[in-house]
Length: 372
Image (cartoon, rainbow, N blue to C red):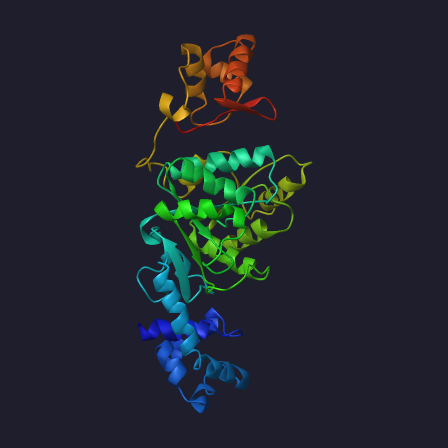
């Protein structure tokens, strides 16, 4: 058994000793084991360490039985225990000021070999929000991006599902131990995610999904990712917390704008107005901002198979091609395809009935990518 991981776990299990304090103590003492072995009198000479902290450290020194049990549970259930000092620990996350000293990971995801982008939003999305989450997640996943979210209802699970449907990589960050899935209805999706993605948490097994855990979870979502995309959010809540964490961590933040009259667009619009997030209307814009504009390694492209159709006629196929890279207003679509608006309306209606496209507010049309 790795004694240093055991010592780190002991320290992290004590309430009142957070990751910033643990790393400071290790910097003074040399290792987590030395922190636990350092005499009280010497610990009290460390700047910022008082009598209460020393007493908490004494409690940590008695955690061996509890940590042994946790490490055995992880070994039995295929959970990797990642210390912040190890090479496999996510490098993006490692350098935020309050990065967890221990992470629990289940699945095949390799954070340091894949670019991660988070998609977050409200638990009560409109069709507009759900469609955007599905489209953005699939587009990114098809280009080799690990799509990160929080396994919650609404935008989170829509993004995870979309990635699973196209065979991409997606990671769920949990606000509880890996021994449970919350909400329980997402357990089957969580199981599927382990094949090409994974689940991670900073919480030991047995930790319940208490409300206080979720802001901490949100800082990890932001910290893992090169960018955070917010798709529908109220003026307060978890998605905005994640966005502000990302902004503070010098990550790129993007927000999909929405109808000013809808409550779950107000958060996104506010992020844009306050210069916290950049307005984004297409996922390629995110890739371009991250310097990944030429990242085509896993791009499937537009094909009859990817649209899951029987056959399109020549006119319909021309419209699908025009919508491949971006949503278009009917006037722009008319200009690109050469069809008059009256003829175009008929073709668009047929394509909409077939599930090939969807109409957004303001006579804007979107190609709906589906897997055969």
